[in-house]
Image (cartoon, rainbow over all chains, first blue to last red; front, side):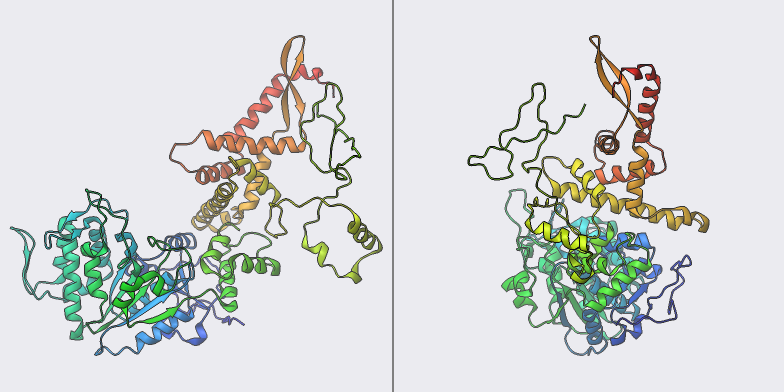
Length: 372
Length: 242
């Protein structure tokens, strides 16, 4: 059965406010995640939320964080497996690619966030792209790239990403130095040896050059990651966007292929395993994908032949629905936060019905418990 | 005022037993709503407890009832009535009233988004309040919903009665079901019409429900207006003959 430690609040950080609620679920320290902590929730302090996750958490989870005024993630098998691999990475070898795949609502994005948080605590440099699918659809302004005439720029998306990158990796921006001179336009240029922070600033202030700034950041990080000073974690959610189709069109109504978008082009280069000194964790997503059937969830189906060949070889990690122990733990968490307000919800019959209606799918269970 | 239930005259030739065929036509009475089931059809029993009781625990009457139901004709259960523990007849009725054009999917989604919105607002208030106030804040969306509708029910209503060529608004006691219907109708009309064009239904409905829960807001005001009109017209009360 699910273990419940008698001592509440094992490791709470200063940021979380308790309001006198006695916690029966163990809160475990991130570093000590092991087999026996499976099914238990762990808390992310508010300070970490602001620095590590300026973007990247799913919207329903953000609503839950706001309502409960705490961010609790469940420790699950796929994430534990990934953490095990990451702890034993050999940084001399080329970067290993891990792909989290699974049906809709099983927890791929949150597992990715768990891994990102762990690596942030271990002082890795995090390159977190929250949703690559947002870069291939509904983009308002597309500019022709100055660097390469065939490609197209996306200034808005690039600048928002740079802002969030800056918040999450402040301390690295002053340490890493660029190894080339970059000329932006007639008046502005970045000299060789200046910190990476300057490039990021240039991208944020001059929105026209934001996409090029992103490209430069990725190139420099790839080049310098093998130096051993820092480790790079590339975390991309919805990586099937890089090899699918887009819904964007040019002014003459011709369809744009993903390779013609500069951001996608840079990301593809980053996700290739020709660099060492870090790891690449990817997630597939059918929910926002374009022109893919609803029931598709396997890597071959969502990535297509081109994507699969580009990402081959990779380590696939299946994220499935809750096991009975995890389901009980989730219900217990909701009950302790008084989220399940219906009188019949804590009873045996209520739980059986919730299990039946949600099929132990984490996303469905969350939506069910929201109105009960 | 309600039309009395008209008994069916069953024709023997060719009609299925129990289905209403030719109805007795009384002068001056029009059939308003009827069901295709005859009077010998029993209502179905949906609750799981009834069927899960082991045979040993049944009393004599219950055993007799079970045996009797094996031979009786039973109506088909409607698709919306489930044996779920979370089912609420008031919520179902409200969802049906909110439905437009048979789009039950949309109506149900709006309803559950409303309940979620009510719950989240109450949780925010709870976290922002001090310890003494926390005991008074109600967080169960279902209790808030029921209490709000109960607070909106009028006690007395007005009915137009024709006397001497003029229609007079006569105060009249309302039946329970009419009161519940009026409360729900007023709530839905208020939320549909008096809102900003871009505001969504769950947001507005959750706001109105919370106001009605505290006995404030436009729906409660409409109930009070109805009571005041009835009070003002109380001289006409003797026009009522039932």
